[in-house]
Image (cartoon, rainbow, N blue to C red; front, side):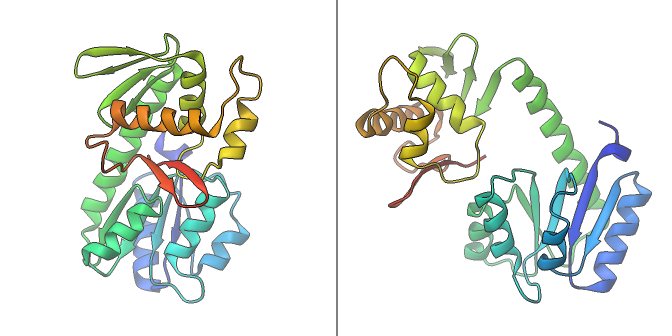
Length: 231
């Protein structure tokens, strides 16, 4: 996809910053839609965006609330959050909410453009791999055709039920997946997916893909709700 075909949305209440970023992105060859508030963006939410540049501090609904709503709706386009705060807790909250990256104000426009270009290049590489049914997740690589995970040069064979559960996580990233949803999706499996099966699957996925399985950042538990794959 060429730059002209890539659609970037900007939600920023500072007129000078919004107009300047929009102008630079258009000059770089991107299609751009700019909004003053989260509510304005939500009215155009089906605009076919490839990337959202989202300010955290907005009048009305703030950027983190908007991002949480987008992910809850299953909208998975990448989001770069723009923040005036360098506080680690603030940035952690942004990334945990489903942002793929962040940039702090004041920022260098050239650096922002390079960050966007690098992001699109990485996503393109991921899409090519996914067309081959191969997925890089954390410390492991999953071959969805052979149902094999390779980690540290060792192959780990998954059962069909484990592989199908993993694929469901992969195709539904950055949102809460309940036990009931997974069990419903796997209802056609020869072996029914019980709650205990699911817990064991997630533990196995953590061992295969997490840098530290005891401190998971990819396959996370959402208390009293279910699980989520953060990507």
